[in-house]
Length: 114
Image 1 (cartoon, rainbow, N blue to C red):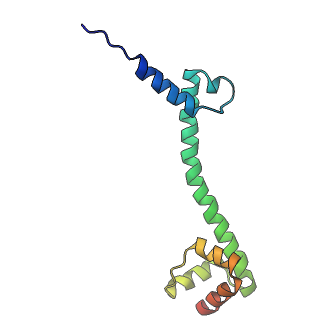
Image 2 (cartoon, rainbow, N blue to C red):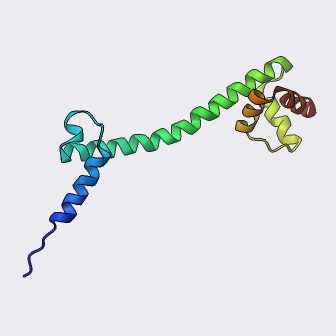
Image 3 (cartoon, rainbow, N blue to C red):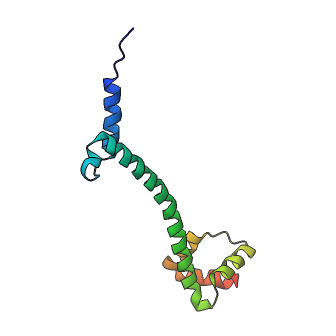
């Protein structure tokens, strides 16, 4: 039987994990077994974090739009339904940016919808 030598492959795999664990505290960045566990956990948290970021930004845009509509004595849900009825295809991010960067254009939009 031929002897299987996999030193290079194993070293490369371990080096890849330890590279991902760079910056972790204590043994989590230097010992392979603990680093592997922490890298898996970190990747799981980063996946969840990317989903949560989308939720946070959507919530922020809704709050901004709602605050902008306060002077018109119009609430957010009514405004969105009026937008859909008038077939204006602006999403919440665009509406929020419009409110911040160009207040006059937002005023025109609200008056057009009402």
